[in-house]
Image 1 (cartoon, rainbow, N blue to C red):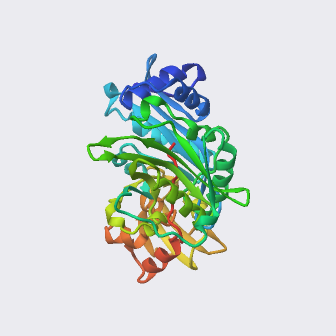
Image 2 (cartoon, rainbow, N blue to C red):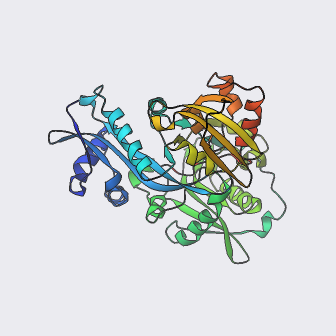
Image 3 (cartoon, one colour):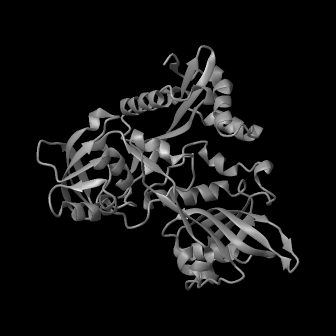
Length: 409
């Protein structure tokens, strides 16, 4: 490979970002979007691959903190803006950038790297495992009704704009982060991402709106949504697209769903990227009519196996020795003994016999508690060495709520 990898010079950002835009279809973003991503780019964590004076590859990372089972938030590198120019494929550029990036993550003592993948097949070979899933659905509000919990009528609703409601909605979001693995603490500036609403991307829908759920003068939930009007020969046939929805309790969430499912002149509510255990599935009278579909969202990569496994807690007491394979980050290879319970954990190197054998990719998939070690073993991706170790570890690794990433990055 004759290309040179180097840290992004802020003066070269436009050139660097143009390569990324071309890789994702070549459609320029709005000035507002472009300016925000330029401000959020962490130049010292961004890499450019250069062939002479021409940028031919990009990769970046955001300095996040990720919620993990037990309520801790753990430093995590949010891998982003990855591309290789079509003229420079199959030259090892992507592999070199991924290796350079993971070495940097390790030097920063961040135990995890995370990403959302436009092409999921790419990242398994670098040790990333699909750790969270989300549900997409379309609720047919002409045929489906909601069964609401007691107290829903005590919640008042107020329609406003996302900008006017920003402080209140961010306060609700912040209170929910530690309650569900996979959520990200909002770093300064990231609250503005939810306000992006370029007209070119609305596909005929209204500007984004916000409805607040309030009780005793306190905001206890919110939803961001847009309405797309439509008409058929029989009459109105519009839709509501839900972009965000969060409530501090089940009653607040139910009040928001009732509002969204009863917007005038609409026949459906489009639900995108919601938790797999989301409450709406139990509020509707016929979930089959909602056509739910599953999709993976967040990929997790353990950069420091010992630190990562010690950073979360476990549902039941666990004492297990893992034989870990990690050819891409060889410092993780070998045996690790994990001991822990709901109060804390430790994970250290050991010479003891292995109980389970797996690659770092499977550890990443199971890390947040949404993918069971048993299911991975059924696919031949985890091997039980000591009888009984698999079932016990699988239960311990679980999470009482499904992990979920509310927004991509």
